[in-house]
Amino acid sequence: MLLGASIRTLDPDRPRATALAVRGETIVAVGSDAEVREHADARTAVVDGRGMAIVPGLVDAHIHPFHAEQTRGVDLTRCATLAEVQRELARARRQVGGDGWVLGWGLEYNVFGQRPVSAEAIDEAVGDAPALVTFFDLHTAVASRRALELAGVTGPCSFSEGAEVVVHDGRPTGELREDAAIELVRRLVPALDERERYAIVAERQRQLAAVGLSGLHVMDGTPRTFDLLRELEANGDLLLRCIVPFWITPETSFEEMEALVGLRDERGSLWRGGVAKFFIDGVIDTGTGWLYEPDTLGGGTAPFWPDPDRYAKAVRLFAQAGFQCATHATGDYGVRAALDAYRAAGAAPGVTHRIEHIETLQDEDLPRFAAQGVAASLQPLHMQWRRADHSDSWALRLGPERCARSWRAADLVRSGAVVPLGSDWPVAQYDPRIGLAWARLRRTPAVADAPVFEPEQALDGLEALIGYTREPARVAGESAVAGRLAPGCRADVSGFAADPVVTPADELPELPVRLTVVAGRVVHEAEA
Image 1 (cartoon, rainbow, N blue to C red):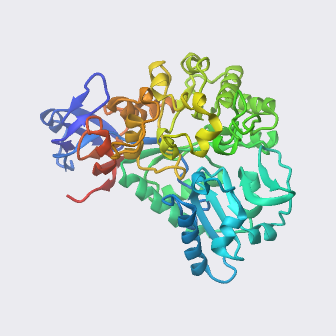
Image 2: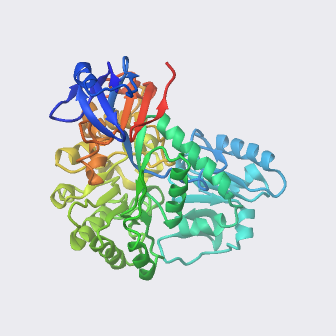
Image 3: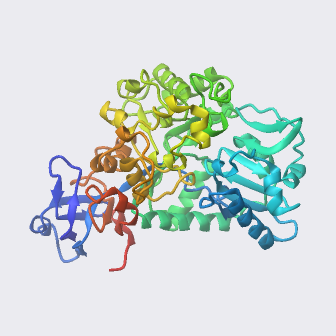
């Protein structure tokens, strides 16, 4: 039993309560302390909920928590200038010594300013060492000259997906766009051994539980990921619920897809598959987001899948096999192509297809989400790299008109669409308190004079909380047992020092997390 708390249930039949009781993994009672005490017996453990504000367990609807390889090396997320980046890389170079690889992640496009992304900028910090630095969105990397030499990258390369080795005057610049190009260099980096990888992933589970998360929609996976989940669960290290799609690329053959279809119902107690994830485009910043009209530099005119009909055929294969389909689409034309593919493919009963990111959206496509029953998965905290004067790489590519149609959270919510929220970590911070704040403020929390982007698209406190609770349950087809606190629902709970709905949005990132419960098990509890 949890007694004496302030509970926001998100259950319309009983919106507020002070106590709840759990038997096994299921909530059996919600109500007043007196009502819930009636369910106790001599074996009942009591949790003192005084001073706690309890809500349904928060779920990050778009995250990459098993990225161990891609988040190795120097964390560059706090570097605002190229000089700061170079200082961190130089420090890493001294640490690895010899022929060791210098690795970094979280690099921001804006740090280069007017200077092109280049190997020279990295070489100035690491000298003749091999180095690979990944941008925050994981769609672009920059390699040192030595790394390019070791990889045998001497000119342009051909790929079966929309990837590119950027070349100037016949010579690679060091910029590598999209995964297939990055992999040319990344495959040379000494891999983590299995024990190291396991330790990183297990520790991340604890970190995510500590910020109040009870569930994750893990947006990339393979059968090997399922093996890792089984191991984590067997050892008691899988703390959070995980829905894990297979990542389907243009290089995936239909024979391989058919084999993955046979794994649709793979699951454990806290994890399951049943989802296929696609990329229809890349990112706006590098001109690989697919747009109705070219961006200001002439980019944005091509899909990630060179043959969009093959993408639509792959979607149909998985949809007809009962899978949920998720498609990465940052550009407005990419969104349209995904909506068209879903309409043609259909969906199994109870399955909601989804589109991820939707950074810019045309008016005529917005109502299609609710009309087609497609979820709009958004990450408003991705706006943190924007600048008021539109001088950031994202805004420079789009221009003011398309920027004004970005992250249309309020429009989508009020159209009746399902709108789950997430972080896309390691692209952005995984802390849902930051995500809640950005959804409400559309600006940097606790910086009152920070620029506000499209304020009319801000969500209120309740809408933001629903985006981390009821909406992830809806898109997962789990509304009957998740996203609210009611008898018969899963015992997944997030507890804070104050109600996140009424806490001023600027104060949310510092709101203490008191308790996280998953399947009736306390996975995080702050010291009193």
